[in-house]
Image 1 (cartoon, rainbow, N blue to C red):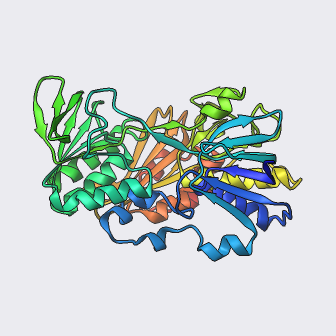
Image 2: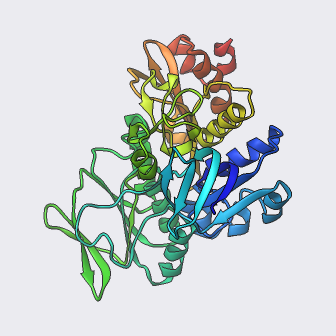
Length: 409
């Protein structure tokens, strides 16, 4: 006999945990199970490549809620259980250990797994990704023996890890296949700014770099061979080249999707009584000009969790949240609001050499996103410009003496 819950949430990261919280906040009285593949209580993931990796925050400080919280709210934690199958007709999921768990409504919040290098040596000791607490713990344990580190991937996770390693006194090289770092998420001015910052901290940034293989000595990674034949010696290799959404069981059960599982404005999949939220949910987003995208952010996880809780408790409201992100590197805090996808102009507000400025992205004259470096006021006030699709005078946008809230009005 399988156990059954009114709502089963698969995935105990930000999205899954917040879905359980939001259901109880909405006075949902039914039974809830939160099923997570990791053995740990739900915790924050962004600090893994920043404060947790650097040792600034212990694990207890990145827990989303203490253990007592879940008990008090009668949320059954099924931790260390990986769901590998979904029977949509029977309203049942199956775990790796063979347990069957029935559901009235299913919330799929599994995020994704790190994308792997397609080359030999990717699974050697000393080669790391930064997706789970266990990943970060393995890196921390090895750091005392590390002199030279190679980071493959110049996105946020790669650059954040590079900053931590550089601050720890390691010799760090970042390899980026494209012609600039952050190429998928930001405009060229921000890429060049961060390249210069990392180089100023002693990091060797290699652009247009193609990895041929990870070299081995005594069963461990000893270096990274580039396509041209150069070998970069390495005691540690960190791979940050994106994630693969963890949706195979849902797609096998017949859900529509591909690069993620497709959901509608209420986060419903094409399967009956099955929702999907967070990094794995492929949804149409008006801030991406209506394109179907996956948003890998805490904001998206939390906001989609709220959408599902409302839908389940009979007060449905469509997802329509302004995207936002952040990244901490060295003493720089980057806060982003909106999506710069498809921008046709960039206004620079402030002076990048002062290390406090904003880049404002326009499409057809309208503000679609801001990247704010050590400029929290711009971030806070610029949100209204993005939400409204405002089209202010670019000259006034560029003038730091003009508060953005005046332009939003």
